[in-house]
Image (tube, rainbow, N blue to C red; front, top):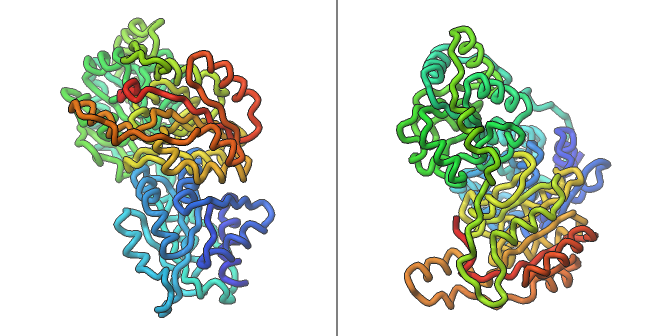
Length: 538
């Protein structure tokens, strides 16, 4: 079997049934053969960055390794920004890239690919010989899961047609060691038992049914309200003791309760600067951090106790110790429930401007969000709108949210949305982005969404500006004219690209938007025309 066929078959045998990519001379035979295998789905991107973003969105929603393929030289170089974003979100991805044949000095696309990849933080796995290609693929897939980061598998183009003997070796089983360190547990239990006003916090690392159930049991036994990180959003939506998101996106009521607490018990949360407000929200509190990933422990802040292990196992163990020691439940959870009853999650302040033709940002975003089917996947591109946007968008569960702002880059949402759709099993994907992000990275892959029949609803919040720069000029009483753009009619552009489009200019247009959502048959773009001075940054 030739190497390109062996690699394709190796992907299938390891359970990779979806591959994203853009063909070039370094990977076209691999992608072509893979797409011919029964049960395999190959999604072609329009740009190499899109292929990696699709793999990222797929991995985020499915919980599986996302796999993409690009060609060498500029193909790999184009994929670097999303690769960095995936590294920072700790997403398991394998990027299979072709490479120039060793010793070929006449290829314009030749570049030192290992040196290109390593500064991104991604791992690099070189196919050593044609005979080891399948082994090296297996290693890359295993590393992506074990190291929770992208791994680039580098395949010299002259290997692709070499004959090799194919043999499939399954990936080693995941480490399911549930033995907890007794000293670490003693420290953690001592802190938890002594707390008078504890809060239990969960992140994406604890977003499994077993972990959620165990954490809820612990919180109720302890008398603690529960909260989540942004990426754990909606994990406890049905729990009466839920506070919502803990951090810079907290409601004012939740921030007040956080300020009164004396202990935070975190499960599967890295406690980054957004969750802790750069540590300010943890001042004066004792912190217990529990995670399966040793690299997450104390990654962003120091903590008083750390336990390495599965969230469900740790939560149940702490609960057992509390019962054994007959530690009484606290009233902090009841206080929160009494305080939060009938309270709206986020209060909407009045619009800052009332220019003719403008529509209010918050009311409009919330109204359109309510028109989208409840069982959806939400993808949020980066931009100044996203901070307020996250407060207004409904997410059914943590794995139905794809967060794209890990590198501070706009325009990463569309590719993620397509990948998420492949993992969403028929659920619609709702992408929220700004006009700058759509123009920068959205147009290209909107074409891919159309060609692949993706059930995608895109809300473009169009203030005709690069908003982060616009607000800086405004804050200094400077003319923001250079941040403003006269884009084409984006809804008409979506139609020209083979999708559907509708524009909202006044509140009464909401009826037209609703009809477009209900009757959509192709990817739909909703252009919301906004006043750049009315887009909130928080």
